[in-house]
Structures are given as structure tokens and as C-alpha cells.
Length: 572
Image (cartoon, rainbow, N blue to C red; front, side, top):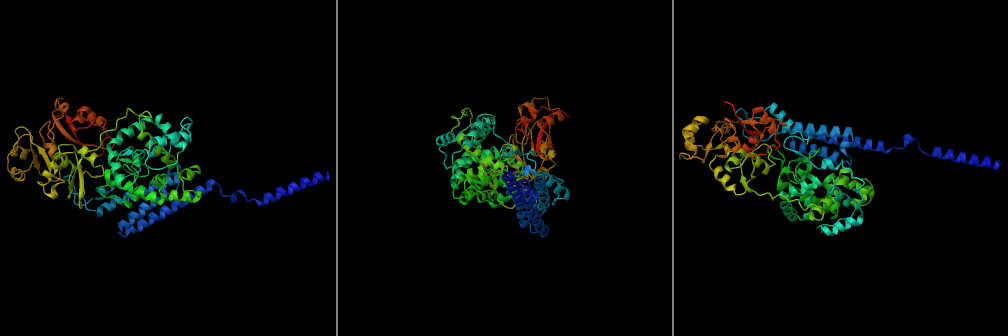
């Protein structure tokens, strides 16, 4: 009995000691508290950088302001936290994007403005125009006209199924050896799991990417080789953007290679009123290769870590390595030290490369890549309206925008030389016309194709331009049907289309369906946000098919706000 009592007392004493030795619950920071503290610190550091940018902005030091604004965004993206998983962080990030875009609208007043694009345009940007520009530049909505969503937005949310995860490291190793990839990486069963995903529910995504890759892959491999980067890493473009130069992510990353503004500036990509080179084919590809090489050098030639840092930023990977003690992607993956998007990103790219290197083996033998992009490049030193360039090259405005996706205003930049891409074999056509048009008129004057029985006199009556001016500008030789003449339309870019004879186009072609559809005239229509060709057809009693044919588009082609279309109507 005594022994039992002593034992009970001893146990009670031990429990009491342990109880008082342990800190209270309030003294032990929970994981949730640590995460909240990290989020709060990230917001504070980001806001501090933004406020520094504000000080530089108020002082007129715009380059310094831009650097601090970019850093404010990068602090959030490099924090190792999925921004969309926390309402405060997401709200703060989106608020920064909005505020920075508002400042950018004011900054554009400090840049050389393009020549006016309408008869009513003024020499200076008004406050209303600046506000409109800010609205147009809102980059938090990847679905805005002219942009497509980045596949990266889906990767972060995607969870592999149990069936897809039925994979072994041996399978991954076998796939790696068969693919003969031109850089080293460690086989992991997760790579095979992503191969399983693409062979199943992700099949459509893979088919679309393999098909579209043909447009850019030869160019990307050439540039990666020139920069000393493994050429197989060019398949990163499929995961980043699905090979769309207009892809935009929730984080305001843009282009084939999904650069955020700050990283783009670090690697020499120009972003101003006229141009955003993040959407450029060749320049953004070269910047991507250089960034990957920089990252590989940082991580002693480890391309898996380089890819992880490309996605999440060097800061996240550096911290993960420091916390784990391993400079190895799969080690920090297993410890959950990277954002979820990055955890999916690296094995996703490796799986994509393996499939792309041997599509027949994985069931994609029916997929045929599209033809490589082909074009001439014409160096222009002054601002040129793409509508004039399209008329000179016998093509359409939309196709030139497709070839030059970095141009934000439909004109080439002022103040520096720009290599304008035009359809192959048409570069000489453009050069021949540009030498006949004064440099300061190339973003306002237009070309018009002469119709039956046209003379300088009849053209003068329709355009309001004096006959003597037309004769002088066009060399004095009476125009022949099918030839082009220069029309000095001032700044009114619609004049030529509005005065062209019924059923005619300034490019000299008439769509057969439009010509034979009982239409009496063709009007020029400026599209609004979220409009479709079907919407416009319904408004004017036209056929979507006829509108598409008249503008050399398909009826399902997405439209951008502010885009001009020729619309056949049956009006008087």
C-alpha cells in the first residue's frame, strides 16, 4: 500500500514538473501564426518599396520609381506563399498592380506621344485619355481583350489523381533514357505521373501545345543554342504560355516566356508607351535563355533548380536551399519548401520534354506541328501605322499585329529603330512605299487601291484632297485600275475606307461572300470590349461569315477593343 502510494506520488510529481516545464499554448507559435507573421512582413516590405517608388515618382525620378514599383511586386512573388491562398496578400498585390498602372498612365505623359490617330486627337494626352490608358493597362485580368490566360494559372490548382500517381522511379528513369534529353536531371516517379496526366485528362492540352510549338520551336532552339542553354529547355515555352505571345498570368507576367516587368527590365526587354518586348518572339526568347543561364550558373549547373527559380524567383529557391541544407530540387520538394505552382512546374516541364521528344511512343503520333513562323524584317526609323504597312504589303492589319505582338498602339515606336515583321517576300514592297512617304507622315497617310474608272479627279472628290496634291504626291501619272495611290489623309485613319467605292477595300480585294450578299455599302466599325463578330453581324443585319471574309478572319476570331472592322450592310 505504501509502495503504491509512493509510486502514485512520484508519478504525480513528474507530471507536475513536466506541466510546469512546458510553455503554455500561447507561448508556442503555431504554424498558422508563423504564416500570418510572414504574410504581414511581406506586405509591410512590399508597401515600403512601393512608398519609396512614390517618393521618386513625386520627385520626377521615374526610372527609380519604376524600379521600386517592380521590387514591390517581386517581394510578394518571391515570398514563397501562394498569393491567391491568402485574401490579404491577394488584395494587396492587386491593389499595387492597380496603383502602379495609374502611375504609368501619368508617366506616359512624360514620353514622346505618337502622332494623333484621329482627326480629333490633340498634341498632348488629356487627363481623360490618361485615365483611359490606365484602364486599358489593367493587367490583373488575364481575360482582357487581346490576351489569353497562361497555363501556369491552372498548374497551381491542379491535383494529380491516384491513378495518375501510379508511377515508379524506374518508369521515370526508363523514359528519361529513351528521351535522350540534352541536360541532366534526377529521375523521379512524379515525372511519370505527369506523363500519365497528359496521356489522359490532359491530352487536349498536350495536343494543342505540340501543334502550336511548330510556329516557334525552331527559332527558340536556335536562340537557346546561341546562348549556351540546353535546347530541350525551349519546351519551357509550352508550360509557360502554351506558345502564345499574348499569354498573361494572374501575376501580370506576359508573353511566350512569362516575364514580370522587373525581371524583363533586368534582361533588357523594353516596356514603354509603344512597345512591350515581353511579347516579342525573338527578344523575349533570348532574354529567357539568358535568364535560365544566369540561374544555372547560380545553382552550379543544376537545371532543375534553375527551372524552379525561373518560376518562383531566386529568393524562394535560395531560402528553400538554406532551410533544407540541400541544393537539390527533389529534396526541397519533399520538404514542401516551394510554392505549389513551382512544385508542379518542374516535373511538368520534364514530362513535356519527354513526350515532345518521342510523341509517337506516348500516343501523339497524329499531332502535326504547324509550319514555322516565316517573315521578312524591315528596319523602320520612324513611327509607321500598321494599317499603312498592311496596305503596302497586300495583307491585313490583324496579321501584322500577329507578327508584331509587342506593339501596343498599332504603330511602330518613335525615337528608335524597330524591326517590323511583314509577310515573307513583302519586305521590299513596304520599303518601296516608305521611301515615297515623308517620315513624319508614315503614321497618318494611307494607300488606296484604284477602282474601275477612277481618276485623280474622282479620288479628289471622294477624299476631299485636292487633285493637284494627289497628282504631286503620286508622281503625276494617271492611276490605273488595281494600282495603289498615296492618300494624304492627315490624321483621320478612317477616311480612305469610308470613301472607297461600295464593295471595295483599300487593299484592292473584295470578299466573294460580301460582294454577292446583297450588300449596298461597307462601313468601318470600331469594336468595343468583349464584342464578337456575331454581335456585330446581328447589329447591322450582316452575316458573321461575310464580315469575317471581308476582314480575312474567321467568324470565331477574338476581337480586341478598338479594333476596326469593315462591315457590309444593306443600308442606303
